[in-house]
Length: 391
Image (tube, rainbow, N blue to C red; front, side, top):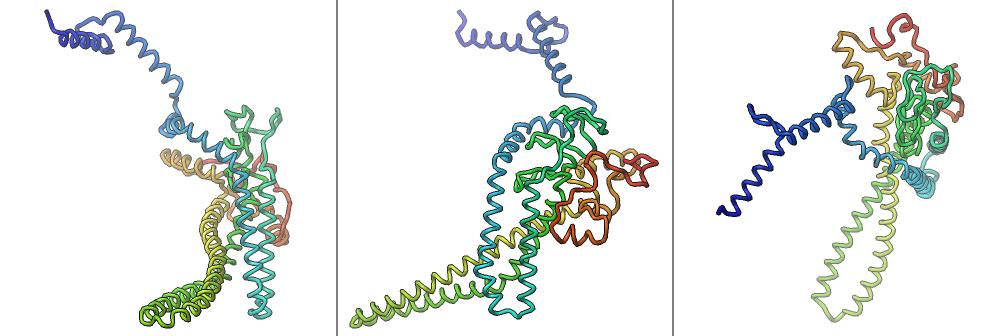
């Protein structure tokens, strides 16, 4: 009688042979294995028919893999947009209050008259521009394509909205709608940056950077003085602590007197320490956040300035990079159809039509709407007689 181990190994080998999809050469596969192979081939063909086309590449597969992560990020950003807006308002208000309570009295009491006038004028102008453009950027709709049938020319159909998409229009997964001339979704605005509020967004970034740099430079001297005061207090406290300890070790006859003297000295140290710490924390509350925001927001503002000069948005930048590589392989050069010239691109963004508009529409608060409607974009004259995408 064969052992149970042999029977178990024999059963396992039979199961493995039956489950193999590829039969041996010269051996006709059994009916269950043939059916299993056909089933596997059918599902493989079905999978390829669903996910494969001529435009499929590694980016498409990565998008499919990270789709759950994108969904989580979109929903978290949508719900936390209000929190980010409240955080911006709280930080800006705290810096403004500290400047009015600590920095402004120093300017009024120590600076010459001309410097006082310059600080008051420049500081309040920047504050006014920051508040105005942030309010307009958060409350102004970026613009949406019409949801009904119209004669507006479109370049494609949105796969999620199932409506025609005009040129430069993209779908925002956070807002769940199509945005005209979409740049990106800004969580600090809780709004998309599009055709009708792109100018407000860029102006807010620019003036906020200028305001943070102004606060950092103006509070530099007070920050250094507060830091030196804290350091000197630490040195005095350490030296006086060693002296008192030695005196207590040497003499015990004047213990009560020394205790009373030390108590008075300790009380003075506490007040001086509290004053230095408060002053130092106030300067940190102004200089450190303002310097950090100036660096981070300054880099973002510089990047958007480069995009505006090129006549692109953040979304179009990625699309144009792919088009540049694709056309380069064919021996062609990509030409942005929405690039009107470096200066003209800025005029289109700010809505400048006359020379006086640089003052009334750029350097002063203005609620004018863009010249274009965001649905139809005119190509430059140099590109109207040839392919607008290549030269």
